[in-house]
Image 1 (tube, rainbow, N blue to C red):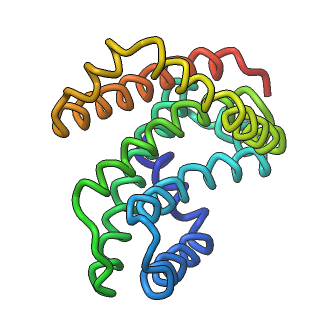
Image 2: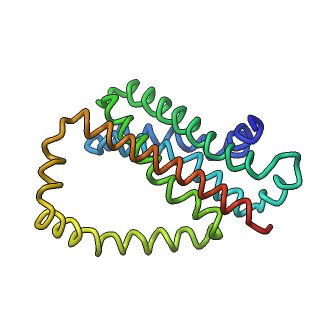
Length: 203
């Protein structure tokens, strides 16, 4: 399974070469951007590119002909995503530090949580849909969220004051821990869903 995780790095060596100068551009020229966004951008780069590459090259057909079970293939993808997220965030942190771009550990934690949330929804879709449809689905989801979420939040703020009062009464650390628990929980649930989809997928 380690070889499955390692292959994403070797396949994407060229693309990874673009990640470092991209982070440098943000660090040098775009000082007003939130550091969590830079960490998030770095963390999703390798895992999402790996999914897109596998879809376009149809490498899943090759992987299923090798002595790996489908469970191992999915496990390698999810474990590898966490490994590359940690390494990418560490790389981005080092570059930002060199260029004296201010950030805190909290920004890394926020990016890691957002990565888990994005991956939780994106990874099963990559097993369920073709790569070209993923971008269509993401675009439709973005448009729908901009239309639907504002009135939903207004409704919750007006009618569920007990819940909103409870949330605002929580300490910052409690909010971060709750967010981390939700993100990790969704990631694990996504892992199970991807296993279910991939076990039944026909190549």
